[in-house]
Length: 280
Length: 318
Image (cartoon, rainbow over all chains, first blue to last red; front, side, top):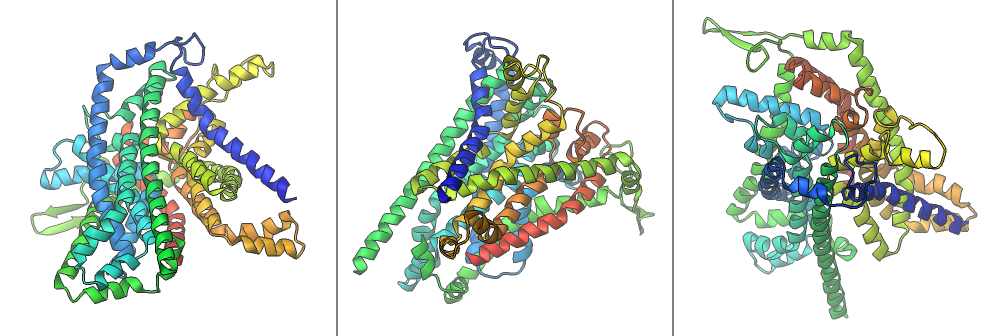
């Protein structure tokens, strides 16, 4: 009986993975299609990659999106790390409930609401203090930091909770000052979490269409905005080519993040085993 | 990791910092750590909602920005506050909006249920896997979440189009002669939501089931309970927190979804996120767009509060 169920579970697992991956695999295959009509196979070709690379609009959008993603990831990691630290290590403080709520809400808030409210906020701010004069790079970056930092905070909180506090306490007992504890113990152990937080924030920013569409201004076309404006009218082989490049790029980033996390986990496991052996 | 957890005593965090608070620098430093992200979120996350609430009570005027002022100085001394509920009355009067809200909730509910049906056995299968396979499978589930949401929706456009992959296969197999209309239907929207939000369902379910004690299942089996009975009496009730967290993570954003109904539903599927975007971008009626946003937010406040409650509880258990 037990065997039967695990066969059912295994079956569902394979179906699920196929469901997740087949559409992406097809997307990649069709990017090498010679035919102008995406679903009609016309033989292997890389002509759509050539079309893509020769389009200045695409290069501009890529450059803008990468810059925003980089600045966003850096600031979001900084703010998210502070927020995670406050939530896990500071016990109770005034405003903790509101703070926690504001850290969870961006994760589930429908993007149209966040986008609209930020746009109206920026316009009201301009009326009030004359800044930001133009919408575009700065406003998109601020909007991205606001929701990315919540994701980073989740990762940092999970990592801090998993780490436990005993090493930090031990260091403090041995006379290390708080700053020393932070720089010698907490930060190095938190580093893999910070890196994956940074990469996640980078990918989230590179991916955002809705919020950027609301807070952008004339002339600032990010990559998702460009892609969206093109695919609204139907399938386009050059977008398949672009999608393939993005998917491979992101997969490499995620693989790096996963590798670093796994290595850290393994190292900690070895440390623990050695410590346990030392006790005996 | 588990051995570290066991060493942790209750309320250690507080004691640790009380012991350090002799250092005056410490508390100042702590305040700064809290203040920076707190101020950021207060300014760029919370304040905008209040402004939207304010605008939703304003009138549409042909100026830039296109809404009337709520607070005005008359003769430099008297403040007049004008609240206009017209936008809300307009939304509640027009059956289009009511229908669109209801349709969004319906689509989100059905998609959440489908995602749960597919996601639950997958999460359970991962929990039952060997440690190395487990890591690989988790990676395989998380990877699509990192890759572009927009492109994953686009991938389905290629599958569902009239000349798309699915129709090509159906015609090749002789099941149909003319393409079946799949793209720009409600069916396409369901597929799109389930596909893109599936990792959000699987991960909380996995996190929850991973912690379940398998000895309970063994005990039930020893006492003569069949696997189906054990599942419904033990595993399912115990995984309820995971089910609730996963379902809310799918339901809440799906209700306000814009990209999926726009790309896969075309003009044929009315969802409120799309309505809001059109109100803002095409009609340039920001007060009505704001009112639509506020009503949507009110609709989602309860599920969001429940989600937050479960998150806080999960954090305490840790």
